[in-house]
Amino acid sequence: MTIQTITRDSLPDLGKALGHKFDAGHALVLSGGPGRTGAARMAARGALRVGAGLVTLGVPPAAQLEVATQVTAIMLRRAGDGAGLRALLEDDRLNALCAGPGLGLDDDAAQKVRVVVQSGRACVLDGDALTLIARDNSLMDALHAGCVLTPHGGEFARLFPGIADDLGADPAVEAKAEATRAAAARSGAVVLFKGPETLIAHPDGRSALHAATGERAVPWMATAGAGDVLAGIITGLLARGFDPIEAAKAATWLHVSCALHFGPGLIAEDLPETLPAVLRELGP
Ligand SMILES: NC(=O)C1=CN([C@@H]2O[C@H](COP(=O)(O)OP(=O)(O)OC[C@H]3O[C@@H](n4cnc5c(N)ncnc54)[C@H](O)[C@@H]3O)[C@@H](O)[C@H]2O)[C@@H](O)CC1
Ligand SMILES: Nc1ncnc2c1ncn2[C@@H]1O[C@H](COP(=O)(O)OP(=O)(O)O)[C@@H](O)[C@H]1O
Image 1 (cartoon, rainbow, N blue to C red):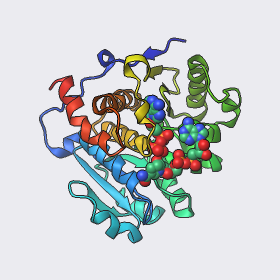
Image 2: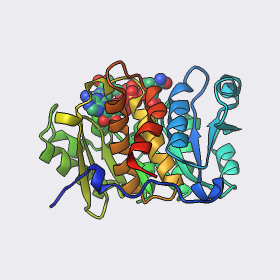
Image 3: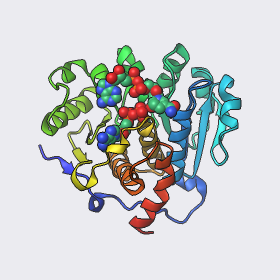
């Protein structure tokens, strides 16, 4: 089976059309509780910088003050549990959802992941959402092709034990590609398996590779929170209306390009702030 290589030339046109903010979509990123809100805030910043028209953080009431003191262009609404999130989603302009970065692993978090998946909306499931899905087959069964799962190696092993068993600690790219395709087929979702070599697969068999090696090597990307920002960039592109696998591919290229552009000393918060320069280099 052919694997597409993700290059600058393979990207869709990322320029924004003329229009008002709702034409560029409204992303909702779920935050965890007090002291755990940084990951979701970084994801939200990635979504906003990549061009979503509006980005809202859905926060548990106990974390509202913490988040409110840290955001400006990003908006904030309360979403304490599954019922609270369901009420928020009555606004169908919220067209792309992100759950997982710093979300936590308690019952409220699990309920919110269920509401996200059952909403049928385009969504990114990252971090703790993946751990919750690994614990509950009914969540795995509810996934659909509008979901993008973004596991690192540890999360992949938890989510897809049978498939991951054959992989080993440092798999060859072909084995990682095969495992990613099997994971997409099993889950019914787009799977983006992270690492210096990132593999992306759709349940219909399409797959793609981005290798952050050679001239695109970014060892300084191995920094806490880099994956949270990637989840946000994908969510922002989903809000803008990109197809899930195209959003996953373009976000992967942009994310590594931001790290290359910034260089050594990078911390995760720098990634969203470098997006404007990378987007500018791509043209209008
Ligand atoms: N600034 C922040 O607020 C940050 C919050 N984070 C959040 O912390 C939560 C837990 O995420 P973690 O990934 O740390 O924890 P997890 O415990 O879910 O996964 C990490 C474990 O998996 C193992 N593992 C195996 N292969 C791995 C690989 N390729 N990459 C990473 N780990 C691998 C590690 O050894 C470790 O034991 C998530 O919700 C995440 O979004 C992290 O993203 C770090 C930054
Ligand atoms: N050495 C590396 N080279 C290129 N990309 C890397 C490297 N290490 C990590 N990454 C990327 O950084 C991100 C790390 O995500 P993740 O493991 O979820 O960390 P976190 O949970 O701290 O955000 C992924 O997108 C991964 O592909």
